[in-house]
Length: 109
Image (cartoon, rainbow, N blue to C red; front, side, top):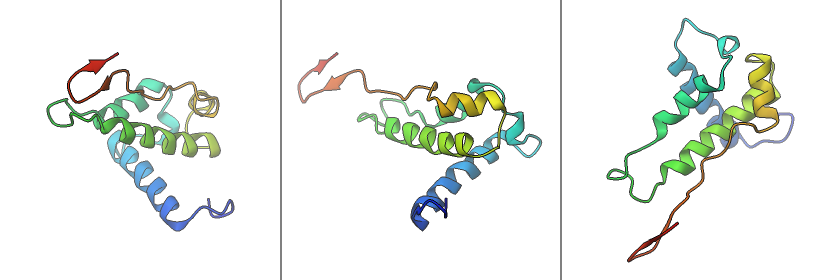
């Protein structure tokens, strides 16, 4: 990341996400043991919050942010299983989108 001109803040945020993912998968596994997208989705889904806690669904931004940072890590490095790197390189894992727009008095799909 240093070579492509990323700011120190950006580098730190990327490292925080990768470290959080590493802590999630545990000490007994490495990034090379990640062979299914479900393993990554399981981590990302820990960022999902219930409507009562987060009525504005701000968790979606966090979820997508973590996904993009993991995508950068796996796609641009040799870490992880080949199929996982390809999933991220070609953006096969989808971003979460807000399907319902809520206004003050009603919701529209």
